[in-house]
Image 1 (cartoon, rainbow, N blue to C red):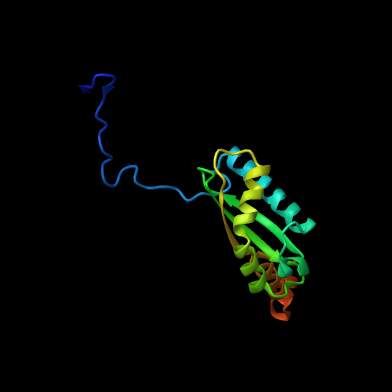
Image 2: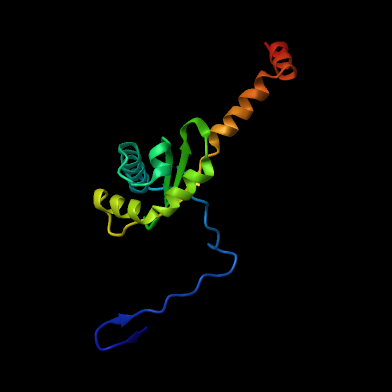
Length: 152
């Protein structure tokens, strides 16, 4: 311990390699309630902006886009926004339009969501519906249906 004119500073030991160096991945169970709540609020705000047509972009005006999920980092500075254009058409065009208008969307989210910092928005296509469709198709295939009938 050593002294400065204003405070006393304690030396903190550095972590031992191999101990406490594992950082668990962020899952819904490990995130705080506040992070989840802010992410849900950002999702609602973005959905409202896109459904009302507040963004003056021809591509976004001609496509209905669903915001399926928003994942926030623990410091609330970055948000990964999962989007899916309805009817699945022109996904890449819609994604480019969202990225092009990201600055405007970030400003609107900052106005409507009360946080210390305006979160950087990163738009990603939501593939969960496609994965669900593949699983459903597999379960309906004759080979799997036959095996499921035998178990019952």
